[in-house]
Amino acid sequence: MIEYSPWFGYKHPYNDQYAGLPVIEASGSQSDPPPPDSASAAWRLTANPFIDGPGGSMEETFRTFFDRADASAVTAIVIGDWEFGTSSAPIVERLCQEASRLPALRSLFLGAISSMSCEISWIQQCDVTPLLEAYPRLERFEVRGGSGLAVHPVRHEALRMLRIETGGLSAAVTRAVGACDLPALEHLDLWLGIETYGGTTTLADLDPILRGERLPALRHLGLQDSERQDEIAAAIAAAPVVARLDSLSLSMGVLTDEGALALLSGQPLTHLRRLDLQHHYLSEEMMRRVREALPEVEVDLSRPMEPDDDEEEDEEPWLYVAVSE
Image 1 (tube, one colour):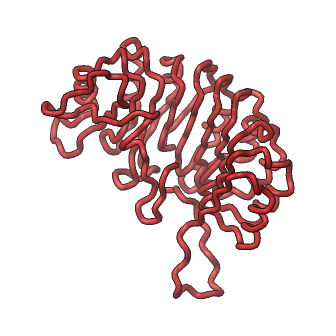
Image 2 (cartoon, rainbow, N blue to C red):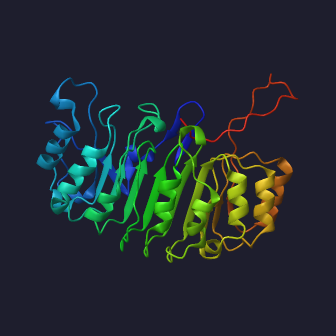
Image 3 (cartoon, rainbow, N blue to C red):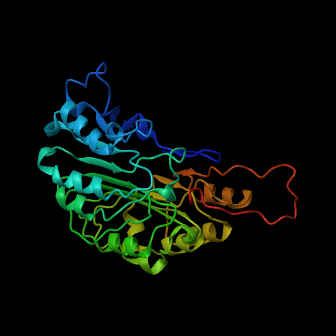
């Protein structure tokens, strides 16, 4: 689970571990030898903002990575900070060019950047479809940042996990994901965000995902971080895909009693192993009802930081998503 702090935002565990492997910095140092088996670690590639000149660029980091690693054995890559304010397009292009040198690559995160380094809305992405086309054996693909992000419908036979983290997910990207044929996909997470930061996704855009016709293997669905979380919960209550899920996440958004009631009034959820509703705005009574309705389900009802004690009692509460800017 990704840890959240109201002050510092989301802290990715991928600084230490990714895809079940310890993370090592690809740039490293001369006194820091690479592991003897390049498949035993996830390689993190970042630009170094403290180095002036080519030594701190992503291009230099790529060169160092290929010098230090046995690229043919590498199974996991984490792309962290790159040059601030620039697009990920050159990185995507370079990874596509090097696909033949990375035949074992199965897990890739593009933009594993903490909010302390760069707010999620400041991360400049690009069309990431070429990565799916260049790596037909990729099993896990994660992207952080919605600015400039584009996806086009593809068929990918091997992909098992797809996660897109944004402070605002465009309708075009959501529709494209829904139009992809992903027969092996088991885990799908979409952070929908808010309209201010490009979150234009509607229920109509989510409909193909909720039907699940192109996602026959799906076992986890996360539609998270939405200011329309109540509407999504109501749609989930009747969504065909839910019946075959093991895990459902409607976390990080503005979920109120209205959405929770719709969820409980719809199709049974007792088959779920886990229901993640963390960062919600449910009353104590509604939380009790959720727990009583799903006694055998692991339900996460963690809430955001409580309001200040000196806040006026009759003051309208501020309802906010966990990740936006």
